[in-house]
Length: 177
Image (cartoon, rainbow, N blue to C red):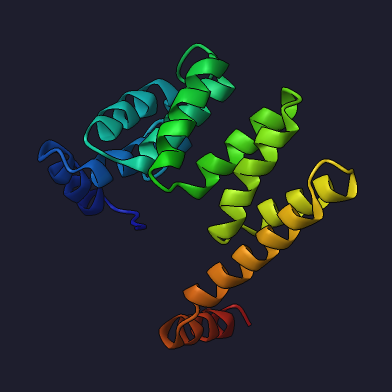
């Protein structure tokens, strides 16, 4: 959703008042980036994401993980970051799963990192497939894991194909010329 007027912001704030988790998450994003006339405020965005997560937003869980990981709007806490990324990943958030893979890799837990990347590759994340390829070349991931990731990635991409999606992409490509 994009808007650049007071009416749009008022509409979002109306939805926030009704405890709409998507609207609360969106408002948090606006504060985080300082968009649509709102002052950039990581602390306020953290508070909004917390409320949105409590109402069920997995995107807010992911943002809370990032906030704790980077120490933005809250004291940096890697353990809490992992906790929020895990909650989001368990509910299907692909980038939360990718972040768990990266964090495990940084700790030297390459087997766990590969398992996270394998799951996210099967969800259609190309970077995860590339990470497994690198781990395979480094002798960390097995040939079977790489093959499984490649097949899972290809299946996910195939599953996401649709005539409507292709038409939308063609339309957007025309607009870029």
